[in-house]
Length: 472
Image 1 (cartoon, helix red, strand yellow):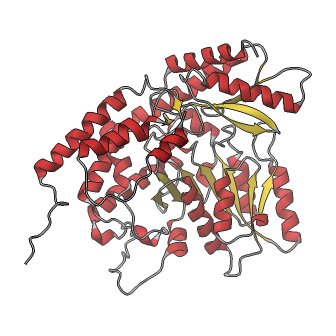
Image 2 (cartoon, one colour):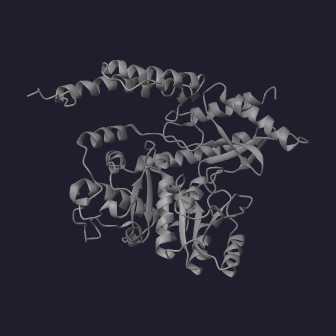
Image 3 (cartoon, helix red, strand yellow):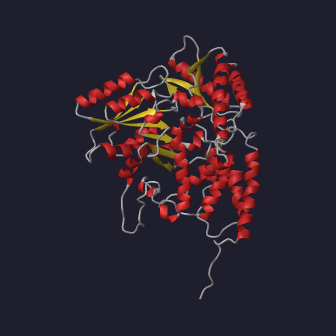
């Protein structure tokens, strides 16, 4: 009889040694984030091609593998965990979550069914309860943790469809603003709707959906035998950080018997702050809300969330049965996550949120969010003082938009000028900004949402803006 191969079975001593060798790489990397360039993708294509390799038949030493990762693969990337990353919507990655991931992957317990790991399922349920309370949802609410806002929006649309529309649902219509994240339209198409069934409603000068035009669109569709069933509001758009009139949207949805979903992937966790609750008043009246803990809660990428005000709506949308499955829970307090989400196999996502909140408490997260709003206001005021800078979008939360203006220039000339402006700002690599298009004009954005971003980095950003203007 051949001897058993135990290569994959590490002893405790071997595992500890492997983790220690990884930490020898991780700690210097984290400690140097403040000095690393905000973005460096020079020669990225050549690097990627150099990493192509066939599946290895025999292994290499761990240090050699770590060298490939840290010395080569990681060398060309956006520094999304660093303080100068002011692009898109940052994801900070609090270090305690890495500890949580190590634990979750090491214990490797299955939480898709409550019976498989009741205690661990309860910890994840606690996280969802905390988030629901933050939104102002009542005790009947529930939710799921997802890989991100895109899948949360998808499940929300499926839940609304299955609760409000018949099996033949192709006359159902969805209403969004022209500032909506593209994941909403993509989710609608994946949920089976023609793309034309997603109605794009104009936004106002503050980039909030125009509620009168929304009501008019709903009336027109009813008159043409469509079935309006879902409104998607924004609590922090990607373009400008705008927050819709959520109370107004709640009134419209209620009067028309529709589902109100709020995409709060960026803005939702500002509900921890007094200013955020004021801006997002009415979100508690929504039927569902998307959150991204990997944005406003500073967790690593791959952590999204969907909450619903009435928990049974998720169960009605997602529950199916199979003979090989164990008994599902009848007690509504004991959640089988496979019955409220599209996933059966899933990781123990709850620990990555539970551990940092449990260890730190929620207060430091709230304080950080308040700081980011203050920094966005400070940056806006400093930019306003610079000649030929136009503030396109004031910060409603922690995101602002601006551009360089030049009287008498055509739209094409302004777009070319602002593209060069952006490149010049990013050239020193102390900060990394990205852009969008607003009213056909190339527009620069600053989004302050890393727990590592503080005043000194915002001062550097403004300095680099001033320096970029010289010579243009």
